[in-house]
Length: 538
Image (cartoon, rainbow, N blue to C red):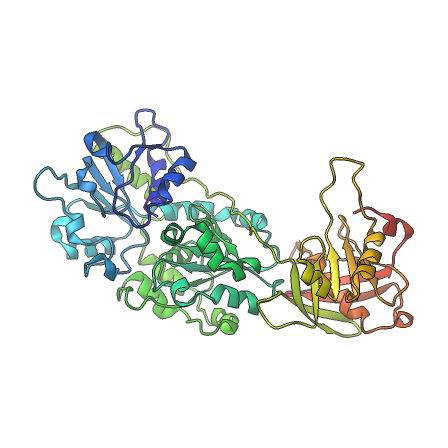
């Protein structure tokens, strides 16, 4: 985490060829496993710790006071780490808030160099530092939080981030877990999967932010294995550097513990936030995080999540964030002025600006089979889809041929197939749309319907017992000047449920029916397929 904060701050010194930026890892951290690869990813020059104390530096920037920083020769700058001093870690051997241990903030005796600048995000933090030890406040100044500056500068990219994630008309629900036994994953490890089992796939997209310390402690493989049921259901495991902040901008709602990600979320936008747990033994009373958790709804069982968000009072999160961050919109330039003053240099004429956050990465795993509840009437069908295997069975199982396992394909009442990428070789073997639907019904006796999703979005549909192939046109939903379209697989489930209520003689075409998927109703037009449509390749 400390490295990532440094990377947010270094743009204050960018554009200056007089400055050389070097990295080193102070020994003693339990979470340093990923640091070397992270520095390599950004192309930084790494000095081994065995060499670092033998050299002299004009500035030493650190985002944590822990470790043998005093061995580095140069004026030291302690930068913001998280949204203030909200928790105490019992294992650190001090009663002070994490980051406020006087023994770490003071540099006394021998060749130790005092902290030249302790950059803080809010005046209340200056009061906290002075209370820990008045001498430690001598070099402390309030400059704001450069990480928050990146979020605020990137707010106009919200629609772009959501498009990159494929969120569409769904609500993006983000869960934020800090590290340690008091965290969301420490207290409620099954919550991501429980929410995925409860919420309709067509109404909500889920993402999980996990503190970098947990990524480092467990390793990517172990973490993903522990979260496998949730990830298989489409929950996105967010990468720790920069990605977490992009997700906070894209989010519609947040479930949090006592980690500081929630305060950044509340500072950037006033959207619902609820708590999954409070970090009882770590959370310090009266801090901004304590204020937030005391005022927002508490999430009980996963199936109460909608009510918890409805109970959120607008403005609550924003009020807590104001107690954590000052100088919004000015932090990076204020810090820049302080750093150049310490260097005794004039900053470049070109002003610095926060770097916009990158596009977030979508889920690496997407569900390929769904338990579908279908409430069918003569006029239409309401479908509620949930990823298979994490909840009770639905009215029918819908599976994607070519993506779901053989066991799921054999058990499915509805098989659908999405278009494959265009083959590079024109001699490659391809199905016609009608050829594949006939093949599916003949190969899998338990399959009642087969739907070929054509590149145009048209569905070529066959249902057992119906001699005709149907074409299904899915009309978009227009609302407030914006157009949305359902997942064609959801429309296929609606048609499947509607046709099963009718005999072929009772199915007049064309027929117009409503498909309610998620929070919106879409019009479907079902008619007999033309010869060209049944012969089309996909």
